[in-house]
Length: 32
Image (cartoon, one colour):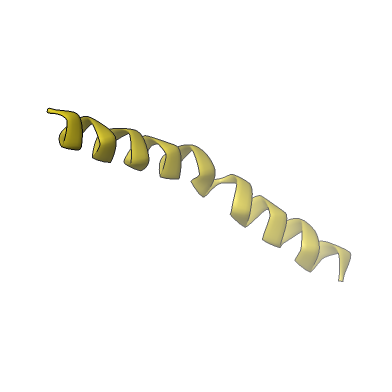
């Protein structure tokens, strides 16, 4: 249970910077 929760939180934290980068690139393309 604890391991699954930890794994789930880890899975949520890892793509976050990548998601922000994709959003930033998307906004950059819209502005330009």
